Image 1: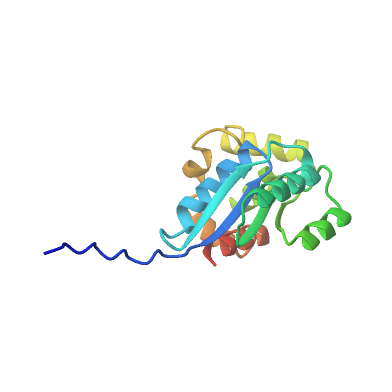
Image 2: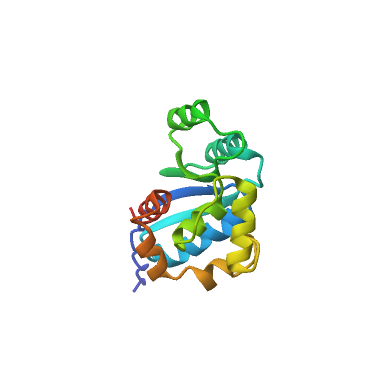
Length: 171
């Protein structure tokens, strides 16, 4: 008597997303958010580092990554202090890349999340960040140490870019 081959289970199709951070600090922040908010099995999110180059460079990098592999959703977290204007926003919209703007930089967004005073220029934001958290933004483990899920949940009402990022991860 011949043995039957086991019937293969149908494969689950997951939604996929590409999320690009402007630099190492943004990538660490995205990894932290992904660990806190993305439920296992909900969605596959690939995180990439554009390694700087300003907003326009991040947009170009994101577009190139999307051309190499198909994703259901594509987003980018970038600073608005360099190479970012209304023309680039329009280009992102045309390319269907959802942009999460850290104005003027990620350090300002994190200061706002923590309820600290946010200076208006990048140089002062970075120094205020280092003074408040005693480390630079790209330091490993920094976000895990200072940004608990409770802190992030409470800050979503005050920080629209954070709320949009979490929504991107959870939908």
